[in-house]
Amino acid sequence: KIQMHSCNFDLYVPLAKVIEKSESTNEEQIIERPHNFSLWMSNEIVREMIHFLKLGFELELYSDDELPYIYWYLDILLSKVISHKCYLRDFKQSQIKLKSL
Image (cartoon, rainbow, N blue to C red):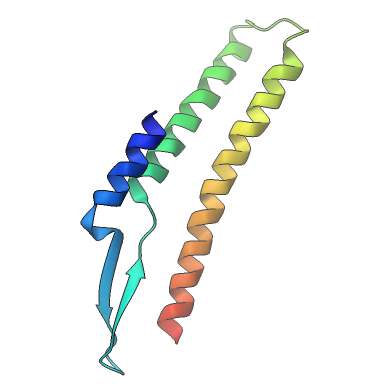
């Protein structure tokens, strides 16, 4: 539910799209910004979930039968962190390409 609210918040943020004027051609172009709030919120939630699972290891809360499920869940959470970082990296690269044109 928090993810849905943060995405809705991003839709109403006026800085989601910025009009930038090119100095050389004097043309305006709309540049999309990443959904900063929802990315930050989902990243923080995933990091807290990973921290929670790590605490279970430190406190030895998991039985041997539960370990495959915990590792499976950690894999899913870590892939979310990687996908967030890849999204931001790709966005930055696309912005660099736009500025070089």
